[in-house]
Length: 329
Image (cartoon, rainbow, N blue to C red; front, side, top):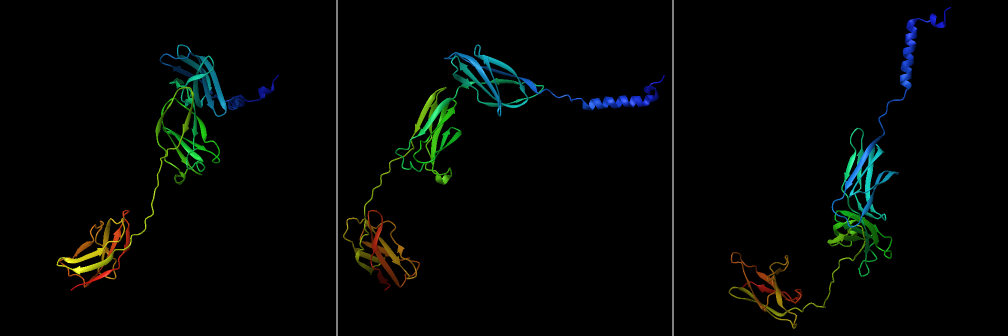
């Protein structure tokens, strides 16, 4: 008796089997690379410690995803291995004592976890950050109501503080690594534009200890300016101005005004009505006569107008005398 298989050619059977194998291969899931890989974090502290540290808290974060593990600290060393998804993560390590107080930490750093290669992070830990409260005292500052913004500099780092009005406290709280900092504060009005800056600020050095709460109260650098003044009226004009011809040129003489403020005189000459008077004595002349000499290479003008003004202690010239005309002989 023959079955249905006997009626099918051998070649057709082979093709059917091959098609089935290919179909199964196409439908089977692909071979993915592993999504996780081991990460080892190690760290060492050198030298004796004032406080006994008992554990290291390792935090790996990426967005809202956080992985945290705690490992014991033995002989100032710790080591932890965790299987992490590949990619970029933010790593932070904190060293704590038995009471859970942080004494050391690393600078938060970005790490890249890759496939088929060692993922080992060897950390350098520093003393833990300190909580620094900065308060700006403007009680005696002339622009205390106008100062609404501040830029606070700790060496290369800059922090901006804004308050809504002149009655609000002007303060902020920062977390800084211990060390010495170059510190200054600049005050602004309604914006951080250069034109709204109230003062340049003076640099000074501040010390931030490790793992402490400290307070810095800052006052703007100001200097006392003493402004004084006196009323000084213009000196009256000299009188009896006389111009006479002498062998050397023209001698101008006058009577001084009655004032104790006179320290000298300015003498002016005009050689043409179309020109301004020329000052002949840039430094106040102390005598009551002045010799005007001609340029020997040029013929003197037919007439010259002379005027004299007294100079006061402040350096200002008083009223001019009426112009006196000298005529060439």
